[in-house]
Length: 200
Image (cartoon, rainbow, N blue to C red; front, side, top):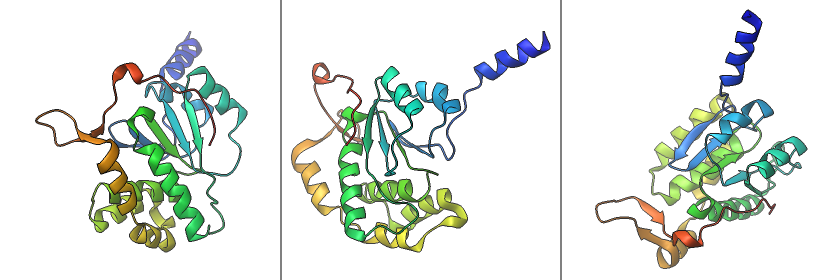
């Protein structure tokens, strides 16, 4: 009886991926999700995952995405060797375009540990949101811990968001509601369909 009760409690426990956190409403970050995290991820009602590693997505994870109609966007940024600044900038810019489109929300960003590559993408998002650099760095270091990389901080500092910001302001950003200062991408609800899984 005691063993059955223990198994039932284990089944009810929702385990988030390592380094999991909410970035913004509808945007989450973490380390690589394991099968033990799948039930937790289901509670987020994800539409998309932004995966920042070059390695193929595991078959078990792909099956989970298919079963839950979650779209996969992959941007292969090297983790162990330092990627060139231009290739990193291009990958981060492309990932940002996916990230800021609320048609892809709720979205989970992850790499291997949820520290460096994920930290760079979130840091560049914060620059787009006009965060001061000290707050951007503090957030990066909170997740990177002792493994904080000076090259990542330098990349975030020099990342140019002006082009992307002009694109947003001129085409797709609108204020949502009369009394709200929160910027959201607005689309007609009948145009919204849950995206199919694909890889970029």
